[in-house]
Amino acid sequence: MRRVDPTNLSHRCSICGVFLADCSCAELPRFAPRHEIVFLQHTAELLKPTNTARLACRILSNARCLTWNRVETPPLGPNSLLIYPLAGAPILEAGDLQQPRQIVLPDATWTQAARIANVLRSRGMPVATLPDEVRSRWGVREGGGATRVSSAEAAGFVLALAGETQAARCLVDAVADIGRKIMAMRGLPWTGGQD
Ligand SMILES: [Zn+2]
Image 1 (cartoon, rainbow, N blue to C red):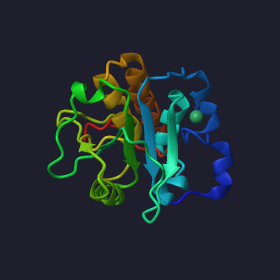
Image 2: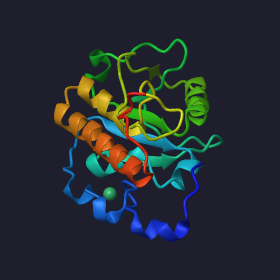
Image 3: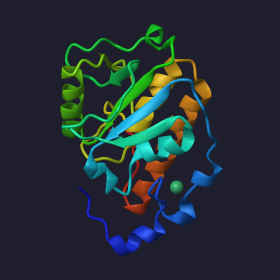
Image 4: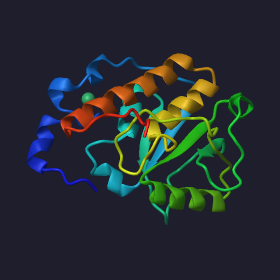
């Protein structure tokens, strides 16, 4: 995990993680898509100053973050659908989203997220994966690359497929905006995930 000087955290927005002077969270619109989004957060994510799931919860009134617990799975509805590229998972289609669903997204490092997804599938949760052509514009997490989308972007792509285009565009644009600002804070070039 990136080391952060705790004395500096008070200068950073608790939602998007950028310096308060550069934060645009107060201007973000709110959307209430008919699909609920649940981010299952690994406990390590709670300590990270940058986390796109928190940003998604600011934009979507029916999104929430639950802390992952392997022993006691957080309460999830009977219409839940896990989104993760597990081997053998079918590609998500618009037909999967005709009825309101509870969209479950692991929010963790790639390795931690794979473990969470495997546990949920072993407990019977249906799973689907995003299409291969989906690309990230986050450009922040090390080892991410454009094919590994951030949590908020994954929610955005699901909502776009469900026809919630305004909410989807807001999520993806907000992630790109925050990614660019965070890389500027680090004095590094922002690739927009094109690496
Ligand atoms: Zn902010």
